[in-house]
Amino acid sequence: MSTPVVVSTGASTPPSSQPTRRGSELALLVLVWLVGILAMVLASAGAADEVLPGIWPVAAITGGFLLGMHLVVRWLAPYADPILLPAAAALNLLGIAMIGRLDIAAARRAESAGNPIPSSDALDQAVWMAVGVLACAAVLFLVRDHRMLRRYTYIWGLLGLGLLLLPMVPGLGLTINGANLWIQVAGMTFQPSELAKVVLTIFFASYLVQTRESLALVRRKFLGLGVPRGRDLGPILVAWLMALVIMALQTDLGTAVMLFGLFVGLLYVATGRRSWIVLGTILTAAGAVVAYLLFGHVQVRVKVWLDPFAYANAEGYQIVQSLFGFANGGMMGTGWGKGYPQLVPYAESDFIFAALGEEIGMVGVFAVVVLFAVLIQRALRVAHASRDPFGTLLVAGFAIIWGVQTFVVVGGVTKLIPHTGLTTPFMSAGGSSLLANWIMLGLLLRVSDHVRRPDPVIVRPDDSTTEVVRQP
Image (cartoon, rainbow, N blue to C red; front, side):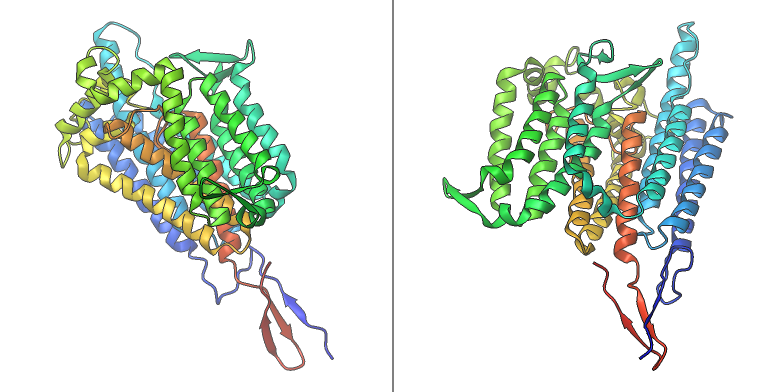
């Protein structure tokens, strides 16, 4: 009998029977880039009455690196979902357009006060986008199989906690606006908690793969709810509690909320037990009460949330200006460059969604929310289709992070919930957040390629029959 021959399905020679849809991705990227540049041109023309030359370096940087990223995906992950990269790029470019519009307002304010014109935050954001794209490409090059990350479960946990502790190291940590979240190295600031959320997601996913059956089946009854054994839940619970304590000490309420949502969400995905949703709701309520009683900044934020106009000239100034901006924009917005988003403190970072709401209106911000929904839905689709539990949990964790951040940000700037200070994924100014989100996108593209890649085919020379061999 002839020996079966395995036909390779390497990235460089994909089978013609399975389309990679990289052409669709390229077309979407070109469309997204053109829309982003159009937004920058409109914002410049609206705010400065001319198209400023500073737009073109930003256009060249973003366009060149997005094209390069497409080529990397075509080479290293040809079967990845073609919607993921364009959706992330669209959010990133819209964020840069709004940051550039705020740059014009900052320059006019400095000029009228006789101060030097500040450097361009939009150009800085474009450079950080380039760094993030390079990190995304590096992830695809270094992590050829996402399952290799499972080998270092506890190392990921220790690394995540170490990153959270870095701002508390004397001489390294930096306190800004009362929060000790940054480190300063060689004159540059960085927020380690942004990378910590990526590392802790890998740790949670890896640990839950090992213990998901015990967590789901070996349980004890407590107040009518099934509770796993301590030895199964203990290590991940300790890591999670340590992370929350560190965040509380650093007055980083937003990251604590995100880690809590990640923890409960992944437990539910791993076990399929609805009791985790019930326990999560109870713990959320209890944690909110404890945080309110222990931390003064939480009390201030709740007070402002309940009645921001009573503190409009003090702690409530930011949220009040945000609400005024949404009211001024109305349904269709004032138009790029025609509003007053610069009146909202930190409009380029924490409140960039409010700045967009004023100038592109409710219709525009609904479109932005749809972009987030598309990104999250495609990630959940990859998680559902993944053949290995680790890939499912890893991608679901990224989807949970983006979903929680988007909900908390939108809820905070619209006064639906108290503002927590989280950044808007891919949009807010800040290199740390942008870098972390592009790294997550790289891992998501890797898992997506693994999920969508066609199965190897065995060709039998004796009778020319083929047999599909399922991948593990």
